Length: 300
Length: 224
Image (cartoon, rainbow over all chains, first blue to last red; front, side):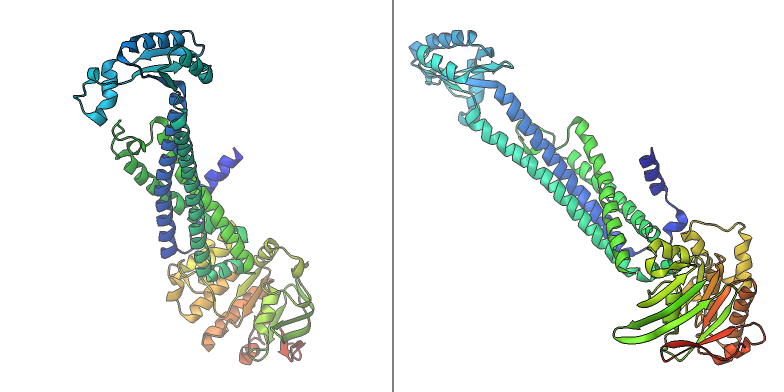
C-alpha cells in the first residue's frame, strides 16, 4: 500500500512544485520522441521474441512427439513389409499411434514439388508410416534394430537430425529478441539521461535560485524527475499504440506465409505491450533521478 | 545568529578574506562596506552557506557550516532572506509566484491569501503581481527580491548591494523597508559601497558599519 500510495502521490504531483521547472522545448520533445520510438521498436522486439518462442515450442514439442518410417521395397514386397512394420509398431512400448499415410496424403506432400498430376501408382515411391509417441516415448535404437531384422526396407526417421538445429535457431532468435529489448531499454535510459542532464545544465540559474531560497536537492530533483517520467510515459504510450497497431495490421497467419505472418501477438500476449510504457516510465524515473542527483551533487 | 571565527577565503592562489572574526547578533543592523572587489559578496555568501570557509569556522544559528549536510543548509537558508544585487528570479513565473516561491519549496502556504496582497502593498508592487520578472524595472525587481526574502519571516536579512541598480529615491525607499524589518526584530546586514546611503540611515537606525580592507573586516568608527 505504501508503494502504491507513493506512486499515486508521485503521479498526482504538486501543481505548484511542477511549475518551478521551466518548460524546455527541445529536451521535452527529445524525451517524448525517443520514448515513443523506443517503445515502437520494443513492441516489435517483443513480438519477435514471443513469435520465435512459439516457433521453438512448436518445433520442440510437436515434432519431438512424432516420427516417420519410410519403407522402400520392391512393389511385390511392399505390402508385406508395411504389415511387418505395423505389427512391430503395435508391440513397441512408447508408440501411441501408428498410421500408414494414404495415397492422397502422399500425393499432397509431393504436390508442391511435382505438381498435381503425379502418377503415384507408376512410380517407386516409398510408403510412409506416421508414428505418434506417447509421453514416455519409444526407444529409437531398439526400434531401428527390430525394423532392420523384420522389415529391412524400413528406415526410422525421428526428425532429430533436422529438428534440433531448427529448435536451436528458434531459441537463439528468441534470445536475440530479448537482447534487443534489453538494448532498447538501455538506449532509452541513455537518451533520457542525456536529455535530463541537458535540461539540468540549461536550468542552472533555476537551480541556483531554488537553492538560494531554501529548496532541498530532493525537491529540485523531484521536480525534474516527475516531468521527465511523465514525458517518457506519454511518449512510450503513443509508441506502444503505434507498434501494436502496426502488428495488428500485419497479414493474418497462414500456412503459406510460414514464420513471417506469425510475427503478430496472439491471445493474452496482446497484454504484454501494456508493460512497455510502465517500464519506460520506470527507466526514465531511475535515469533522470540519477542524472539529477549527480548534477546537483556536482553543483555545490 | 551568524558567527565567523578567524575565517579565511580566497579564489585560486589569491587571498580575499583573512582572519575575519565577526558576529551578527539578533536584532542588529550592519552595513558592510569596502571598495569593489574587496570581498563583500564573498563574505555575504559565507554568511548564508553558499561558500565554505577555507580556514576558520562559520556558524549559522549555532551550526558549523563545514559540518552541515545539504539539507541542513537548505533549512538554514529558510531562516535567512537574501537579496542579491542581480535579483535572480524564475522568469517563467509571475512576480507573485516568484515571491511565494520560498513557501512553495518548503511545502508551506500563507495562512491568509490577503497576506500576499499586504506584502505586495508594502513593497508597492500590487499592480505588478501578474507581471513576469523581465517586464519589471530594476527598482521593482529589487523590491520584489526583498518581498521574496521576507515572506518566510526569516530571522536574518542579507542584502548584497540592494541599491546598486536603482536611483536615489528608490535607494532610500529600500533602506526604509529594511529598517522597518529591523524594527520588527530582524537582523539585517546590507553590503554597499554607497556611503551616502549609510549616512542617510543615521537618523533611522542604530547601525554598525563594518569595512573590508586589506582582506580583513574592521569596525568603521562609532555607531552612526
